[in-house]
Image 1 (cartoon, rainbow, N blue to C red):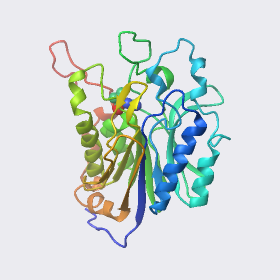
Image 2 (image 1 turned 180 degrees about the vertical axis):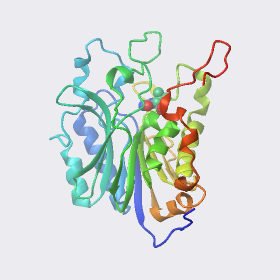
Image 3 (image 1 turned 90 degrees about the horizontal axis):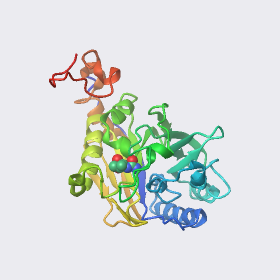
Image 4 (image 1 turned 45 degrees about the horizontal axis):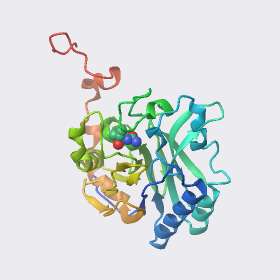
Length: 321
Ligand code: CDV
């Protein structure tokens, strides 16, 4: 076991810029102005980096189904920055604060991804992550109160989970449903991640199983705190909360330490900025002791983790090995 604990502080001041709803009629320009004002608030608080939610430029459009997907093209970005989003990049450069932003991406060859970027203090894009775990459904389900047709609007990315050097540390990203899967954190943990940034839109009504509704906040905290602790990393989860087009969504944005403790949490479900000083050296206390993966992990006895998607069972319910 390496054993080396935290040394000279490497503090990144992180802001989570939670958003309230973006309605269908809100213009992109108005939303970018809102993002800029959140960024200025974070910069006033001395933040180094500000994290925005998933799909932060538009309403959560997968709640509606359209037979012809091109009718939804206006929800996607074809370039980043664009003339509409450049004020945010200019504000970042002017205030010397980086940011992470989620948006719908339409590539030149017509591919559609749920994307999050990481932008440095000089306004340049250092990293792009495309959502891996796409929840919901791929066809119209008219019996639902509202759709969650992410699997129609986005293809799952095969790029996997990168970790990039930025803000004096090792930074990774994940988007919404990714946070519920331990593989997400571990893939980044195995690259020595120190700070994971995540935006989310989580409806408070989970239509396939309403018994989970009352647990939405608990499950949100549970997975992010466990992922942080088990990989010795900071995790920042940022919501687009409140009531958007009649659908209530979870707020409860968090900044979580490698100990699994909550350093900051929003109190409302609208636009709100929370800030915490994240000393990335703290990660060593976990990554070099209890979770020294190189010393303690046993990948040779975990073959199923990469060779099968779900349980393989015989008709009698016993596992097929
Ligand atoms: N945007 C999401 O990925 N939302 C999912 C919902 C479907 C449960 C989530 O995991 O929060």
